[in-house]
Image (tube, rainbow, N blue to C red; front, side):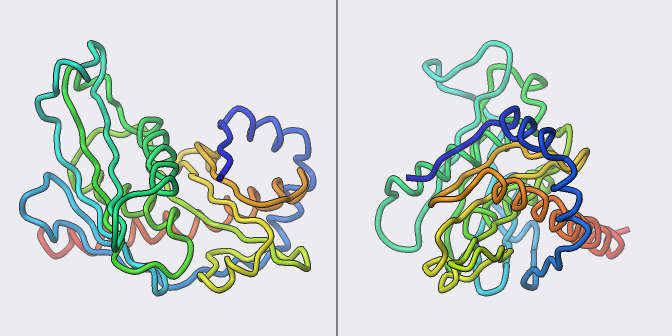
Length: 240
């Protein structure tokens, strides 16, 4: 089962070996597959986005703020619910773990206190899975939240790293590369300070390898945030 770490634990690791992290950032050649995104493609949700990362494709829809059930009501902030629909069949333990990571990432970014006693629902649909699915979910979720116009303290993105049998780090791996890897890590990075908000890991790895993957993910996040800016700029330059 995938392990999840809090941002405070990650911050301690980064602080303890700041020199090695900076060394990796300066020497690594970070490569990512091509991105593609379309916002407002669904009419019913308050915000929606499709995100394509290589051959991986997902769809995200946001509903709310809306009325919340009394049993789920929180008096000082909005209630966020995340649901993942697999391509076929019913959600499994894997989807539940991904939902938790997505919910914690969104809650760390959204200003939920501005909408007390209300509900927000984020629904994600898998269209095609060719690796780095959780990071695609994170990217699609952020674009959908932006499309819905919800107040956020910062944006976030997802980056997946795989460690192969030789100890090499592969960013944005395909499904075939994930199967051959001995460790798989996905990090949610914020746009303000490029810090790790949440993480999900699977497999065996050392603390040093974890630190290297964090550094590589932070460097890769710069390309994704630049894609966010370019995508939004192109969209609104056509409407203004």
